[in-house]
Amino acid sequence: MGLGLGLTHYVPLIAYLGFWIMSIRSLTGRPLWGLYYALPFLPYRTMRDHLLGYPLGGNVLTILVISVIIGAFLQGKRLPKSKLYGIWLVFGVYLYMSMWFGTALGNAPAPLWLTDLNFVTWKDYMLIPFTFVAAGLVVEDRKAVRTVILITAISLLFIDRSCILESMSRSWTNFDENKRDGGPLGYGSNQTAAFLAQFAMFFWGAAQFLKRRKIKILCYVLAGITVFATMYTFSRGAYLAILVSVFVLGVIKDRKLLLIGAVFLVMWEAVVPTAVYQRVTMTQNSNGRLEDSANERIKLWQAAQESILSDPMFGTGFATYQYTNHVGNLKDTHNWYVKVMVETGIIGLIMVLFMLQQMLAVSYRLFKRAEDPLFRGLGLGLFLAIWACIIANCFGDRWTYLEITGPLWVLVGTAICASHMPEFNSATELPASESMTVTNPYLVYR
Image (cartoon, rainbow, N blue to C red; front, side, top):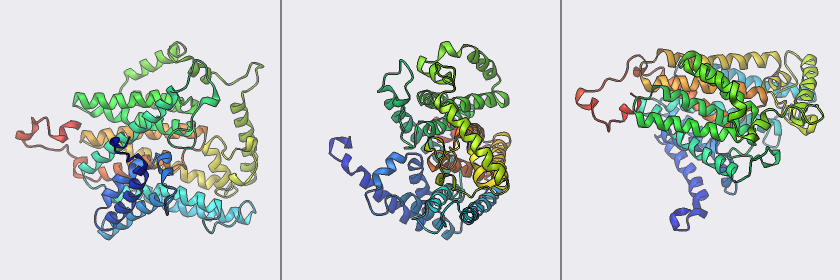
């Protein structure tokens, strides 16, 4: 409310100026500040949309991320060792060459400039690895790791608040597709649900290693609120993503969750709200036929199968799917892996699967091998979030959206940095005189 001073109108301008100030500070010695400033804006697309009326308002986030990278290099910083940087480089180049392949086949125009939709799609997609690189360059110590997690938590809380307030403003005695809201990510309830599922599981996993009771409870509360917000997005893909991730958590860390999960699967119909039950079981209409959403998926996959068989190795070219007509004028195959196969072929899918494997390996290694509780929580939470991401993408493209995977890749970059810090191999030692001081921030994670 602008603190009662009538400043609300100027909030977008203040945020816009903040981008330029932080870009300058990033270039002149404080690139970490730039990353901190960019983090809340990565998922919150509707907040960034308020900047579109200002010069370069639609590009200030890109400018800031690039400034962080340049500023880090000017300071002599280097990326920590990881195969993921090389994979992204090869994959990014391959996608650009794939667009030209699609042009040669007559499936899309030449990807030359911002007037070409396929080039814009590629450019926006490449901002995701840029955020990954930015985090890898500037997160250098334990304090930075903790701050990245804290900012992510605060950002998630604001998104939860927006989703819940919007959902609770409607009556949900029965499910109604027309009542579903696009959410703060600005792309639709399914995309918002994928984001929420990922980060509900991240903080659920991270909370496993918190020792201070109050902080542990707060972390679980945040995860619980996020699961609640996910429930009212009515996304069946997000529901399954959470269930699979909870199963993974039960297998690798907390076995009692397997029993709780089994009981839930037996009793879920009596536990969830009526609207959620209707949404989950809504696969057929009253005539016994597939409902529209399920029917569209079947038709899309049948058409995708024909396309894959015609160009199995290289596909039709990256970002070409949006140029052709499909069922319901949809621009998505309702399965990201199918879309990867259609556009980039077997080669593209192999790169994607290798990337996902490396993401899981980085997070699992940090969870199992780190001795610092903060790093172990980061590793476990990230491992669960990646599993949620993998499952959610079986129901549509949730991968190429900066809003959904950008924050996830910042955490991946942070995890890689953490695995190269001294605390990775030894828990942080504190002087005896400080170890009993409750105000010591390190005790938050012990």
